[in-house]
Image (cartoon, rainbow, N blue to C red; front, side, top):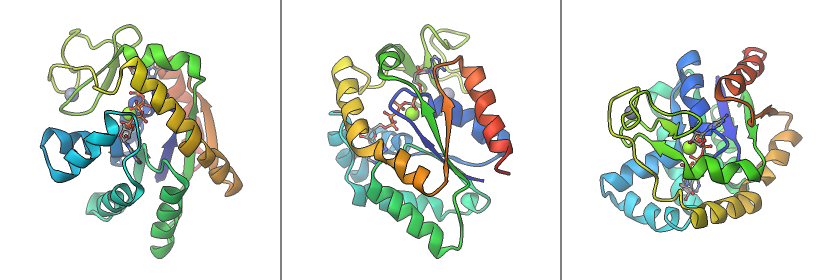
Length: 216
Ligand code: AP5
Ligand code: MG
Ligand code: ZN
């Protein structure tokens, strides 16, 4: 299956992606995670991406599109993939469409996790992430069993640098301007499905599975 996850910062894309990727055995490709890995390894891509991410702005399309095309060309993507955080602009969506078309492939669905803005700030400021495997936790809604360590790999969880109130506000603005138009973009192509992301994590996952079972 080839799935795009849409939704504002803090919608729960990363949280749900881990479970979807497990259930359907497809790689979870998060552009944010790839950038963060490059930042931690101090690569030239990481240095460039950091200057945008710290401000809550988007990394330029050209950089991002080339990086994703490389990733999608790897062997583990042959049977499908789950894109989290890409596409984020119309130009990125068009690039993905031509990539698929060249291969005679089609997206199964663009799945939008809908969460209104008033939920977002509390989710973001309470978030903790695993710097090693990318798992997402929340101090109140989804704490790790040992409050400081990742359930999946035992690494100490940290707070993301762009999860401050000021940066979250900028990210929400950027989302509204650059990414929200993709909802219509995919609706026009009859590819859009939506799930209510305000419910408990496990219920959102149930909703997602219902949608995906009908796409298989
Ligand atoms: P990225 O890492 O993709 O960040 P984002 O889109 O802002 O999304 P988040 O990861 O913040 O939220 P999420 O939806 O994954 O939520 P999560 O599951 O963690 O991108 C970061 C930056 O990289 C961008 O700002 C940009 O600079 C750059 N970038 C990335 N991709 C790019 C691209 N394509 N083009 C250009 N630039 C790009 O959940 C959030 C919190 O809520 C957690 O604490 C979680 O435990 C909790 N939670 C989740 N679900 C629930 C629930 N149902 N109920 C209660 N709490 C919940
Ligand atoms: Mg995420
Ligand atoms: Zn981990």
